[in-house]
Amino acid sequence: MAAPPRQRPAATGGHLPVMLDEVLDTLAPQDGDIIIDGTFGGGGYSRAILKAAKCSVVGIDRDLDAIVRAEKLTEEFPRFLPLLGRFGELDELAVQAGYPAVDGVVLDIGVSSFQIDEADRGFSFQKDGPLDMRMGAAGASAADVVNLMGERDLANVIFRLGEEKNSRRIARAVVERRASEPFRTTMDLASVVEAAVGGRKGARAHPATQTFQAIRMYVNDELGELARGLNAAERALKPGGRLVVVTFHSLEDRLVKIWMRERTGGVPAGSRHVPLLARPKPPSFAQITNKALQPSENEVETNPRARSARLRAVVRTDAAALGGPADDGMDLPPISELEAKR
Image (cartoon, rainbow, N blue to C red; front, side, top):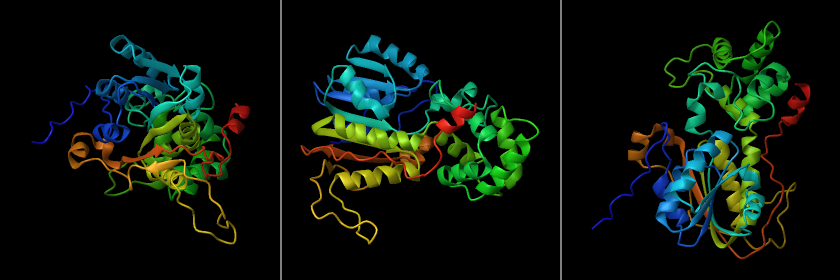
């Protein structure tokens, strides 16, 4: 007789943890484990992990609002510890919490439903709000990007992070408009983008969707943070520890795929530019999933946000961490250059 499906955590504010059953199956928490939920968000993964085993969970988030939500979970589960910070520093945060090595790390990459739903955060053009998009409280905002960045750099951001083919046209329209009046709100930017590219007949998405994605990813250095987070997980996990990563678009998934392939012994094809290593280092991970897992049809039907989700998982070996630079490969100007212009 088939086992009954797991009881999914109750949604809070419209938030549903994506691919929860697959996350629990690949993470496989056990009694006594120390697990890091590097992207706490709405707490769906943390709550489910704490219910699945008598383990301890460290929930990390750079968003102070998420930490306020996380503190409420400690009342129900004393085994839960919320920490304000970036998952790119999860190994350092774990050491500070008294955990020099951990048994599992789970990362749910991207913006949370809470951030999208709150107009004041400026992540979405569905509700008008200040043009912010910062997951944390500091640094340059989306308004700084569209009001201060040079046209060529802005076009590159929109093209590379948003995969928007009309990036040059959009950047030109933004620069022309800001010459007379700076951008302040989400709807303001969305209307200029829409006017620049025109309506897309039959398209399900708004014409500004990819531009907003690109600017959000740039403001929060999301690919760079992901690269740093993967390296931090490699350092933090003990032999046998598991790393589970859920991504939501191709740029994220490609970065994770390449990183995991290198860590599990896959060697890129040699060329005259990058010759093969004569003696590659022992792999620091072994595969759990041979290819990316996708959400079930039933989950996509009940939670459309899950449609683009991909899950990849690996288990730590006893080999030394391979380390290396945490480069996102985008070759874009650092956000610090805009911060200096504010």
